[in-house]
Length: 121
Picture 1 (cartoon, rainbow, N blue to C red):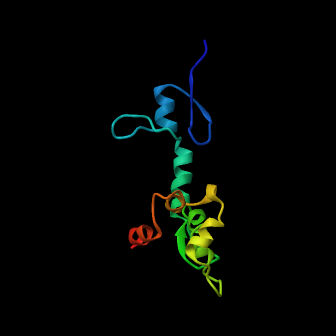
Picture 2 (picture 1 turned 180 degrees about the vertical axis):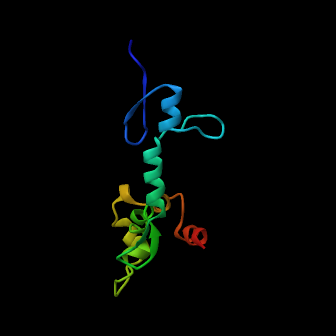
Picture 3 (picture 1 turned 90 degrees about the horizontal axis):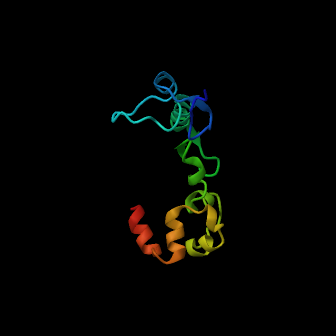
């Protein structure tokens, strides 16, 4: 008799699909729906969110998950430059695939630089 398995959405580890195993390895949300990630992956994710990292470019303090996005921002990359490039020129020279979503909207014409400055405050 073959038993069915469920796998974690993050680590892809397989677990038995029975009530005891699901309760032990996944747990349930408030609406009695099973979590998609196992307890190990959820703990690892929470641990990384709590980790505090100091950016080596500009000295900003960020959490472990947001430091990669922070390093792609104009402020961080131009912090130590003597002469800062114009934002629009700098933006066109960047790799489009790695840009944050709001920078992509400026390049696509959905946002203007003034809209972006108003958006960030």
